[in-house]
Image 1 (tube, rainbow, N blue to C red):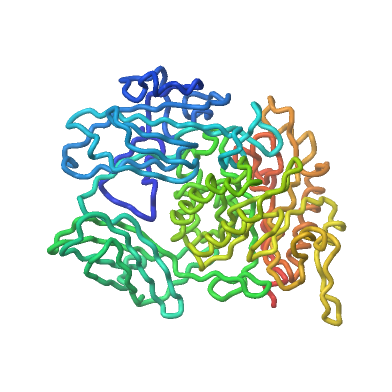
Image 2 (cartoon, rainbow, N blue to C red):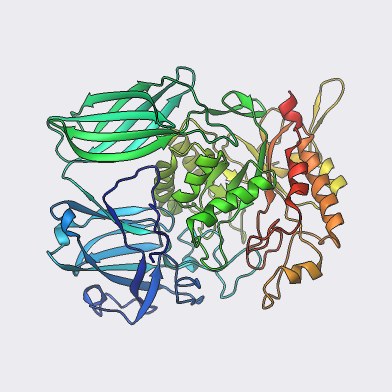
Length: 591
């Protein structure tokens, strides 16, 4: 059976495709001399691997957790008879980090960035029978020149750094298209009309072509349009017959069928979807469709015991969202990692709010030139995910503290913030979560104080005479930038991180793990844990200046034992207890 055999790109679906997951030839090349040795033309490599799981993972069949500076993949590709004569587009969901592709010994192209997809038209390199597809991946997170997220730079996992991911870690597939085809689409919605504007990107010869769009909701026609094509883009509005708003907990989605035609004959057909909703910041509040929504977020790291960066199944992706919602969270920070499109699909379907984030850790940003290793991949991420209604904000950087006497380059943060806003003016952007704020839509704070009374003292109050008084904590938090003045939206985007007693830690941790940890002193009992969780969370729910929180974290990750679930996704306590604490009305929702 082919692993992860579901269609990998749910917002842009074609029927003519073939999944290339499964067994590939594989070889580690730490000398990085494989190209000189002719690996790009070899008929076989020394080992086997199960794609799309990284070689560090158990599911890959390799399980090598040492550093791998270069790895090679190879497989045969035979084009089915029914697709002969079509263009063959080879897609990689994600390859960490620098990928180079050869087909039948010919260099095709390369891609830099471990989190975003890339594709090549390999038609010119194919022969009529068996084809030799070879991918090389170079990966050196110790270079400080690549975003690596929570991947450990040490041999072992430690603290909040975990097992590395090298090479292919998302689905590989081919799709078959005609000379003229639809390359991409963007949806911009208007809930007041209601309507959707469709902007399609096209490839090939468009003479005599039209593009047809049919929109439906639960099988009922909602609107359609057909436009003549005169360039490689087409933009047009469609009025919607009915308004069905996408909301937290209610992932109402419109389906779209796009058809490129010439003389009435379909050249290409793509299925997609969109959600009808708005997001905005209004003074201190966060609003969806004009209604104040308190963000009850949880930190989701996107790690799996057997697949590392790759979920073993589509069901596991969906279940992480379901478990979170059972705990009373309405969304998540997708932390230090660009998650795969299938996760976002389930978030869209379930009405789950998420912040899109990059895995910036590992990249040195003390010099402005380092932006070259960040910005292209971040732009690809925003463009890939811009249509997902579940993404309600962007956060390109996390905790970019000045380190080792070297100061971060503020212009990198400012440039990335402004480019993100230019790419997407519809969502708020946090320049950097929890660290030195430079230019941001949100005042963002990380606070792992465990004492409830001390935690309460950190957040502002309004005196009876109406004057605002900021806490000493917030005055110091961004003192060298801009202190909190009571008017900006305030997001406590990391807090909690509560563990259990050492006994319980050992029960929920692999017996070989000796460095299990959580923030502060772990509670000695479940009752003590609940009291602390409630005290910290009530503080934020009760504060009318706070528009949302993000609890650390949904599940344990390796040695980090502060999850509400174990790493194996087992609840540590009755989820209804946490649900009841999380879901009561917040002060800002009563304004």
